[in-house]
Length: 205
Length: 205
Image (tube, rainbow over all chains, first blue to last red; front, side, top):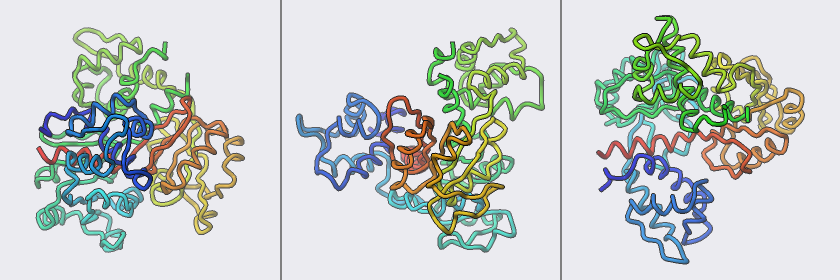
């Protein structure tokens, strides 16, 4: 059933989960209108999206808050822990590793790696920065599922190749470059210049 | 004419620009197939997207590389400089401020602000971290157009309110929270947990 959730819905589900978590202390139910307003979409979209999860709202009342959160977590596969490694211990990699929000969703950063001798051995949020040469060993030892690339752009492709060769087929790419990967590899790319470029377009109007 | 470029095209244009820049040294022309492959979309999409810019490819040859870059930059409004401020001088704000890729697209970080006394006065990439209380003064003095929020989530909304009250209607939000803003405000949100959530979904299949 999960395979039939459209990609655009999948992309909105984490946003709904974020909104529901923000609202969590206020009420035991949540209307599609409330969730739509918080998430910045329309309420028909919310109802359609959550219908893929089998969520049943009550007319005039809305969805059970806890149940809907649980259904979204289940649909996204956030009910089990996901070991994550960060490659690159510069400012961006350090910011990511220190970020507390991942853990509440089950993403646990199990290692941080770098090639820079000055960074290797230093501590980042309770982890010791390890040499990049240990990549494959760490992936195998810690059952790593997701790799976050926070390297300079020139290094990103070779690290991505090593990740996928070692069986890590989910990559979050923060390096400002576009990776070439096989079709079975899921890559999400965060390019801050791209986001600023979109804002610049809207500045003109 | 610019107002008629569809939003989805606008969102792909920075990606094409990134790919063209990566390819820049190799050839003076670029086929829609080459650009499509580099950008990870199909070539019909590329041809449709660039047609909104008035770009004319030559059959069997492709687009003039420099001309296409120039047309994308013009469409996105990247031909003039855009002063940007960063609010939050933690790891994320520091990573952003140090990032060299913004400047090549005309985004110049003109100030970094924080409320933490330990950070105020320290140097980040040639800038001195300034107290948040100076926000409005700096926006006016430096004609700031875009604000990047790299604050803790609890502080993001109040800073966004101050930005928009001071006339900054373009916000890149890196704080893991959803902002409430008026319709005329453009907000782009980068939520790394959301990206990991989407990867987690695909891990299941």
